[in-house]
Amino acid sequence: MAEYKLTTPLSDEDVSKLKAGDIVYLNGVLYTARDAAHKRLVDLILNGEELPFDLKGAVIYYVGPTPPKPGEPIGSAGPTTSYRMDPYAPILIEHGLKGMIGKGKRNQAVRDACKKHKAVYFGAVGGAAALIAKAIKKAEVIAYPELGPEAVRRIEVEDFPVVVVNDIYGNDLYEEGRKLWEQK
Amino acid sequence: MRVVKYDDIVKSIRDMIIYSTTHLSPDMKKALEEAYEKEKSEVSRAVLAQLLENAVIAEKEWKPLCQDTGLAIYFVKVGEDVKVEGGTLKDAIYEGTEKGYKEGYLRASTCDCFTRENLKDKVGYNLPPVIYFDIVPGDKIEIEYAAKGGGSENVSRATVLAPAAGKEGIKEFVKKVVSDAGPNPCPPLVVGVGIGGSFDYAAVMSKHALFRNIGTPNPDPELDQLEKELKEELNKLGIGAMGMGGTETVLAVHIETFQPGRMCHIASLPVAVNIQCHSSRHSHITI
Image 1 (cartoon, rainbow over the protein chains, first blue to last red):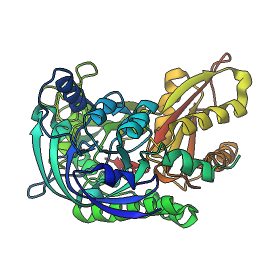
Image 2 (cartoon, rainbow over the protein chains, first blue to last red):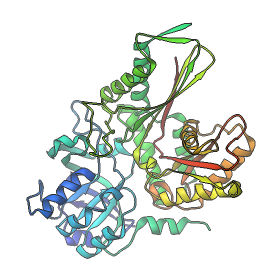
Image 3 (cartoon, chains in turn purple, red):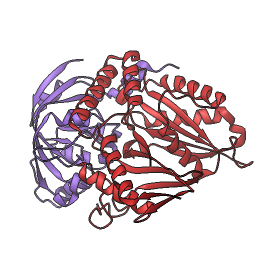
Image 4 (cartoon, rainbow over the protein chains, first blue to last red):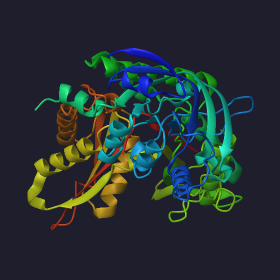
């Protein structure tokens, strides 16, 4: 289990060194999106239209934060369950997405896309939302404000703590971790 | 007849919501600390440490423990000798919920089932709540509230077993639900189990079982034993904190049965499992 500090956008070289179980502190810009925003992003790609942000090397954080209190960049902001984005993730990965942050299992199609196009799925600690918010320094809605908590935000982060769940080599932290501790 | 003012109920509910979503309850804090001590996996211990640190930050800054501040769930016991003045009890709960979520900077997480549109300006901010009313003797109103997140709700299940399945069948069903859920509902978990009644009522009981404070034993010794056995067996699944592998997957199993007795129809054995994440935000007021 290694520890890395990485800055977005991520390159093939960045993600090639990561293995399931590694701890990563992310810096730079992340984009937030959940189901509703994913559906719109994929529709744009299918219609050949421009996306609200550059997907190349980008990292998307699956989150719907609470409203910020006055003077705060963002409210509490922990990860949501990722499987709901599974139908949309492979096409985004194919178009340059390098990282996804969420919690919970991904389906085989997403894991295959990670292998084929060199992308990584990171897990953040669900329910550690007040703690994670400390790593978010700036937040700005850049698309779909009508979606409220589900709008696409550009967030700037410092040492945002995540763990590699699915790497580009086909490993899965959930399966391996459970195998290690399961008592039959 | 005792009279309670509508506005007082609104305020009590508002305050309870804001406090409960930002302050981890003492029973949960203790359970997480014990899990941290017992956990053998290093990765899971690191997760538990983050959760305890999160609780400290949330409490200090009155910041929501989790961004999913839930659907508001209430179990309300209304005394037969109490009257609400200035409006209905149901309206007071709705208004208190809206005020609590709005003024506490909590998330409005309700939406139209089909369009998925957030209707906070039409239906109300995080409205409607789910309310179960009961009428009891006395002149008090007792309100239990939980902020129930979606991730753990999504993996909850109900079934009606054949009576021959018995206790073993119940255990197998509970184990299957927790095993299939894996990392998704944010373990370590509290597992609420409702046994008996009807198909729907088993689910209601499984939800109410989540309100019991961890560490309070089941008053039925046989069920208390079953809860302990289930907890031990579920922890053998190896899921661990946030599913990263470990020995502490379940903080507690709480069982409720259809009272008086532990009843159901002669043809049925209804069982429901309601999963609760580690961010169990539950509280209780008496007015």
